[in-house]
Amino acid sequence: MFLVFLLFSTLFLAAGSFAISQAQSPPQNVYALEIQGLTWDKSTLKILLTPPQNNESWWNPIYVNSTLRAVGQWNDAITYFASHYADYAYLSNLKLEPTVSAYNESGFDIYLNWTQSNLAGSSDEVGLSTLTSENNAIVGCTINLSTHTHHGQPIIDGDMQNIALHELGHIFGLGHSNDTSDVMFPDIALLGSGKSISTLDMFGLATTFAWMTNQFNFYPVRDWLRTDPAVLPSNIQYSYLPVSSQNSRPNTLQNNTIVQYLILVFELFLHPIILAPTLTLIIFGIVIVLIARLRNRRTSKAGS
Image (cartoon, rainbow, N blue to C red; front, side):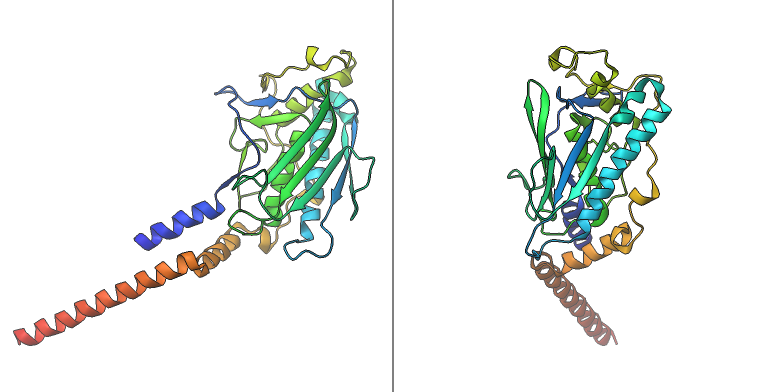
């Protein structure tokens, strides 16, 4: 029993929830999403993805595709929401335009890169977005994504897509959701299923880009863009928006949760911290069993 407890305790620590940014507490018992009080003054946001150069040993080129699918998911969700909710049709003009380059070029609104280690001095932060603003208008953004957990485990393709989805939500001026299954919830369970953007996320987006209705003068932003949580109105049901086939999480062995858990268990057993005490306990158990059998044999002979 102790071995089972030790295994699952370590497994929980290694593959459990990892923070993707700092959280606050929105209202409870409602679907709510924090609003940062910041927005862009443009509807087309150009994002540059810069993979590491020099063939770094920790780098997996598949992460570029993971992140591009996340960008595509946001564009899919925006298009779907704008076409199905007439009050927010103005969002149809909003889109992300991704470019992949080995060099850090100028002229982009958002710069996204990857690093091997965890971020912001945290032991479990795997994604971080930094916004630059002037008078509550966003003028630039940097996104950093970690390729490994603090245990040194590489993040799988599907998890990278989920993490990128969350961080891209922040670049729109969105904060955190109070619903644990929402893509904007501050924690992510690694080796989990693929995330989908919700109607709550899109309502938050409609709030931060309300200036597109031409009902507001853009400046001063603080006069019309609220900073209290956006609560999903009663006429919009909380649901997940469809994902196109090209942006769906691939059905591969790397994205198979069961396979990844088995691999993780095997790797954990091979880790010196786990392997040494486990072998010690196994040897100790074998010795106890052998001694017990030897005593039983002696008792049997004495009785005969």
